[in-house]
Image (tube, rainbow, N blue to C red; front, side, top):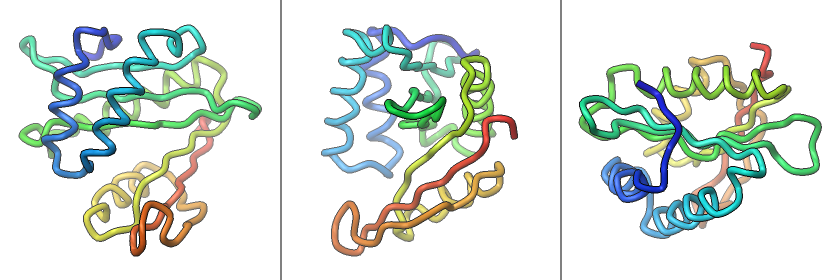
Amino acid sequence: MIRPATEADTPALLALTAGTGFFKPLEIEALAGVLAEFHEENRDLGHRAFVWEEAGHVRGYVYHAPEEMTDQTWCVWWIAVANDQQGRGLGARLLAFAEDDIRSQGGRLIVVETADTPLYEPTRRFYLKRGYTAATTVPHYFADDDGLVIFTKRAGG
């Protein structure tokens, strides 16, 4: 079931994210800060965080928020599924849930950022398969030979 994230979920979300093998330690630290800020104040500013839970275990999550200084543009900042749960369609269901939630909040455009390295090829295919367009790339964004790919999708489909 998908439910709102709670502060008590934070350790599980950090462990799940680290366990995927996709995120660097610096990114896990950033996620810890994002979740702390979410529970302290950003939830009140419209940020949204949801977890997929089964049998008392967090299997995945999605974090999305409206982008400041835009007309209803939203960003999906984090989405992850536990390594041993990948391939079950949970990521697709979490993304569809986030898209529906964004639409219910009046969202107009959805933006997702990811890396251009070979490790992230499945991630890029994931978004393309779900109707996202690779809008632009920024070479060497994260580091040398680690560029940024920005995907977009109209919230209406």
